[in-house]
Image (cartoon, rainbow, N blue to C red; front, side, top):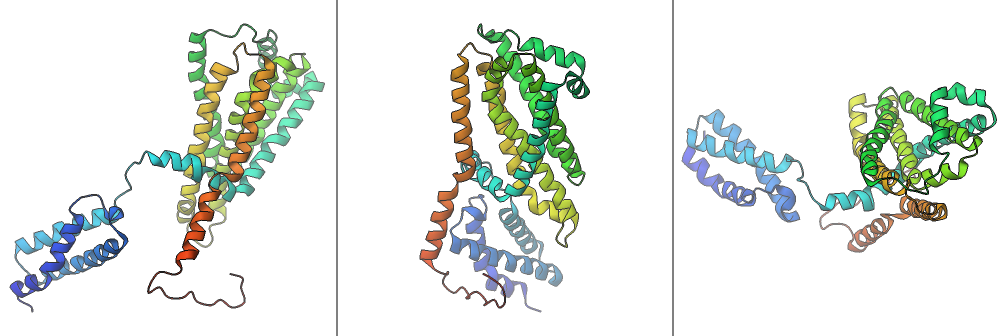
Length: 346
């Protein structure tokens, strides 16, 4: 068995180097790439030294020193990334639209599950009062007709606008949350709430238009609806992604399959929540304002175009630049060449 003094003398240099690398307490992510590789290698060696010192019965001063180093190394290696103000920008400018494009099939399916029932509800309620009352309570239908009968030429008081903003946030997020959270029922809950909300939304529009107040209705809903309805569809798509992860696990446990999709789910939900906040602000302060209807409709058209452009193209430029830089740099020094594949496309 190696004597304690000889063991300490042989290993002290590595211990001091790891202590130096960990001294700022910021974790390995703040180190240079070469220092990260060195720190992780020393950390593993320190863990082995700790087990060896305990097995050999070395003095408590050595064991405590190694135990503290191992604990600090573990914390630096596995610590959660701290909050960054730039993460909000990354979510909005890059991660959210990229994730939607990656989950485009579910987004398209969610849009169809919402839009088709909405069209059915609209045309059915517009042409048949009996159909409308089969979807909406009579009191709700009457209240909708009355709400949009006068229009918004006089605007609405500022105090009432602020109060309604809180209501819209609560109501809209509740609808989106149900569309997402019920996806845990193998996606069936999300499908149900997308169809249900689409049918109800269409029926409300059909009732109001059938009563002759379509102009007032469209002027009110067109701007905030761009964000609100899109966010509800995205929340429903996220719920179906969650449900699909529980159905098609790829040979993993359901928990591991769900964890693998957790980053995309979190990004979609956070993005939808941000859109709902924008929709609530517009619905409270812009939609009931006394601005001309043509201004509201033109603004809604511009916002819809910008939103479509954002979903299709935001974050793409950085992907292209990153791939070009990686190709220009070539393989990392010492990296093994990728194994050749046979019988499969790259």
